[in-house]
Every structure is written in structure tokens, then in C-alpha cells.
Image (cartoon, rainbow, N blue to C red; front, side):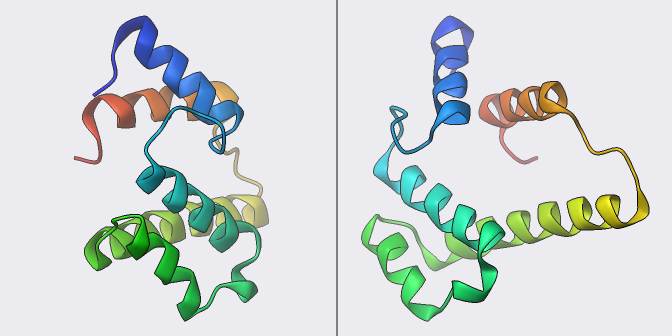
Length: 105
């Protein structure tokens, strides 16, 4: 996992634009899919899995990422509808750093 200044630079690059960040094509493909799933879910269909598989993602990895994305989106929508405060940029940055360091445990 990424640590120190190098890790911080990677995190900032991904937060700024995952399309140009120095990450694996596998991760870039997944982030693009998750962006579409989040912003335009009605446009997601079976054909969207093909580029993920071509990038080397397994069906289990795809399924896991979809589950995390779904939970994140549900929590945000519930928070929005009930007026709860969601994390600010600092909170999301902190969470991103933790995930880069230890993953989902």
C-alpha cells in the first residue's frame, strides 16, 4: 500500500482526476464504471462489465465494488433526504487515506 509523501501524492492525484492519475488500468476501469453507476445508473447495463473483465477484474471484484458503491450511494441519499450531515471533503480525504493504507477490513 502507498505510504508517506508518495502515497499522499497518489491520493491527491486520484482525487483530482482518476483518469490521469498514475494508477493501474484495472483500477481506472473500475473507477470509471463506478462513476457511471453513481451518476447515470439508468445507463448501466450488462455490456459495462466487459471492459472491467478485459482490464483484469474478476466477477467477484466487480460485485464487491458494486456493493460498496451501492451502500455509499444509499447512505448519501438517505442523509440528503433526512438532512443529515455527510462527511465534508476532509472526512472523505481521511477515509480515502485509510482505505489506501488498510483497505476494507
